[in-house]
Image (tube, rainbow, N blue to C red; front, side):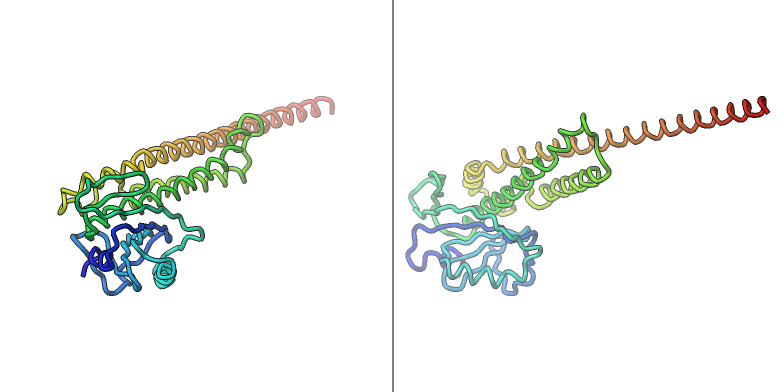
Length: 271
């Protein structure tokens, strides 16, 4: 029995899809009885009804799962999550099944011809990428708030050693996030599932456009580049300031040595 049959067994024609960001990674190999469909992401039936689509980058999407069953499923999954999120990002979408409908988005509802596993995987792919992007958007916004005081004080107060250390941390976090954006989400690539089901590409593009995944990812990348340039500029100014101080120290030592030599000569003349 596939995920679609599970959902339609009770005659359900409309249900919710809930995407949740659990953490940095989900160990799918530890889940035991894996049911994979059409080479796509892992699909599991949920005890009590419904289905779950899981991605190794730390997100999952639950279809037609009631709150109590959801809590039980997430508790069971928790030990397999690396670096769990304390505040889980969520994205919700209504799914309506209509064999005669054109597959498209209607507000916060997506129309599907059926609840086959591959269609659920397509919807889950977009929703789960959306929750990961939402987390990156939050982190980028917080980083902007943190580096703003450093940028504002560059002209007046300069940078201390502690400030430089903080900026280096921000630079490292920015580079790590850029790597994760490319490695985890692969937003420029279409899901492998579409290789076997090319007729679903239009559905994928419509749902992806509704959640503005490409535009949001570009906006995050632009902000990451701006943060990186700001931090690098600040560190270069700090390094330049230190170089100037070293030069002044050298000039001071030379002047001191000249004065000392003159003093010794004057002392020798007078004595």
